[in-house]
Amino acid sequence: MEITAKRILWGKCANAGQTCIAPDYILCSQDVQKNFVEMARAVLKEFYGENVKNSPDLCRIASDKHYQ
Image 1: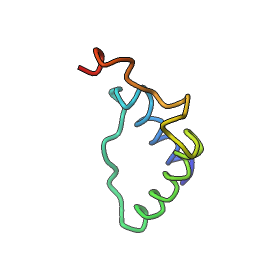
Image 2: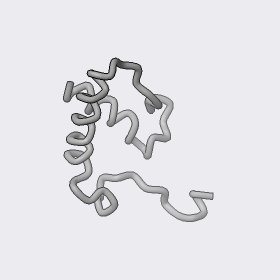
Image 3: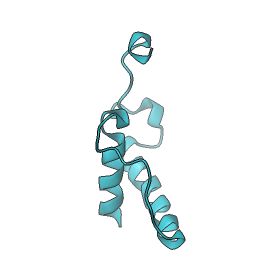
Image 4: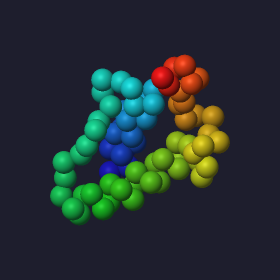
């Protein structure tokens, strides 16, 4: 399950989710959902650390102009 979570989150988080491969949702049973959410939290901590806002690995919008 961890490898699946890493692949899905990589696809969603790459380039701030602005790619044609970024998944928007996952169809699964409630049992799988519970396990996936727990694993996803662990994977996100692995990717970005405890404080995501300060992570140098988190993709960000470059400026207010780009945001607009």
